[in-house]
Length: 325
Image (cartoon, rainbow, N blue to C red; front, side, top):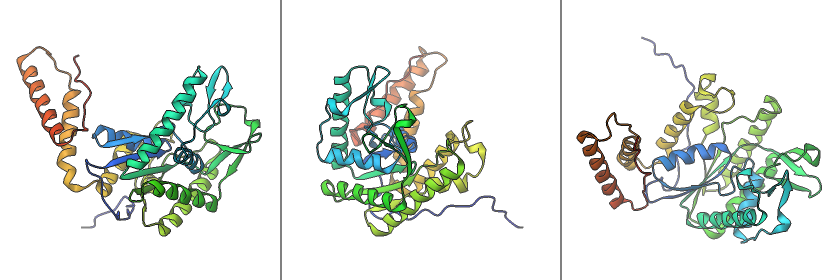
């Protein structure tokens, strides 16, 4: 009997260095997909933090954030712009925008401090690269992290070369190692396609990112690569693994990539803990037919005891309150 192989399997480089466990401190930076993985880590109650400056799509924006955090830069009014009565910084995502200038400045400086602290404490840093296309503000002659809907005529669109990306990534590694030489740095290229300007442009962008990351990976022992883009493009080569926009991976795809990530980067001895956390999470979100029944009250008491037992082992684990309806 012939067994047909209907899928191209992506080989994942074997990690060098410590795997993730519940004592690890994990910091995630980069594009939308870093949030997808970060949300999974949060769900399973790992010690993790992600994107203090919001989503950052390209390596220069990530480098700028890390550079400023290492220099203990302090944002002031000169760094803030105004558009449609909203204050913002070209260095950060719109999540940090606001109607009050001083609040925006305060939030930016708080995010810088959080970035520095997270880098210094991290055992693992995951950096997700979304695109090699960038926008340079003409008056400032500066590559921005986000255009904030400022008219396009004020920018010039550029494609970062492989050399420029490589240099940016090496700077990122050097900055991190200057304060945390033992930290493991894992790069990945986002499986989310940036097709606004065409598929050919997206492919050029991803090719530059992948080529640069692999050059860095070959040079740096502290750097690793997780092939999330390749898994989406090859193992999940079907539009049923995308959202309706045919661009973003859907929940099935994210779950699949998370499972591949888990197989590769999470210590196998943690599996029973992940299963227990998952079971507790599902119990907390369980909606009882009769909230006041003895059976449900007994269920809640047992669940609370399981949480306490888990917290005795891992004090950083906290759960949201159980649903009451």
